[in-house]
Image (tube, rainbow over all chains, first blue to last red; front, side, top):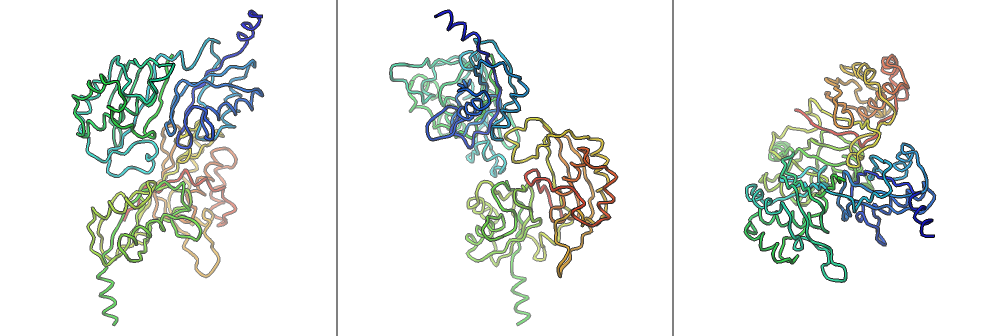
Length: 258
Length: 258
């Protein structure tokens, strides 16, 4: 029986999708009651097409209002699908604020969340006094002046391997404690029209970690906190020591690498 | 009495505004019952600030769903206003999908609609099979293949001075017939990410003229009509001879010159 089950699992085809979505109208990636999530939309659309219940696993659990340019997800099915037709059917069923960019077959052991080795997130800040209406849902307007030198100095403290407990809203109590050690490979400040973009690349990000870092960086570059506080915030391992969480709508999941 | 009235009119200060808006959630520029227009929003906000009823005149009457990067409008008031404070108050009262970019005092004879000597409209076409969710409200996706050589050939027929009766939904019957002669100075095809932009510059545009030209150009470049039909469409002076109107959401009023 055990061999039979294992054989059945191996008979499943595994599909990897790259997708983009405007998070404005969704409760985030993850399924939850009484709210429309991206995961639910995908599972319902795939279940309709495949005619069986389908579980979709996502690489990053984006929050409500967070956008994606290159989210990755995978699902398994007994069916051997024509990828071109599947892509067309899926985009035909999905609303226009969620688009599948690419679907490919992948080895059955592939898991979009566990196998990710790095993720790129961008956080867009509008530094103009008047924000373009076309950016209002895609960048956070910062009205207070920002000291770019302070921002650059502060950013350097976050690169490398750290215990990010102070920068996550993840519950640290309870039976299962998630490892809070993460490595940020790069944190660049890129200039762009109307403002700047904070480009994060790391091996993984805890719940609300990017937004909590951005919020803290804004308090420092705005002169409300000293750069010197950053090591103390890390050392405290207490979320209450870091800055406020920056708004969801400035954040984009840009890429997931395997 | 007559002198008194004239003097009062001259005592009014005239203000010119440049504004940008995302037209998605509005019924267009012009006030109409049971729908929210940009003009109504501006008049209500200004009336609140100035504490008297205020009429706002716009350069171009954009339709429902049409966007603006550089719409121009003017209003008159007896009050001599601090422009910096007015800009702040107005943007504070307006929703974030409508932004005033600039306000200046201007000669009392200035009329944003009658004094305009040229207007620039852009129409964005997405030619990708998969449209970015972030462009879905700002460019028309064209799924059928487009012949760019045919498009270029067709475009040249529209440049110059013509009777555009066939390309407007303006009622030509009734007591007041609007002059249907307009001059298009330029009509460029600009390549951009994911597609092309049709850039119109002309001395004025009739109701739905840009969208009706774009719709006709799409039918020609898509092989549904011959380029040779264009002179016949002009000659017919009949709206029914031209192509369908292209969707509102691809259109932007970019600039008005005086």
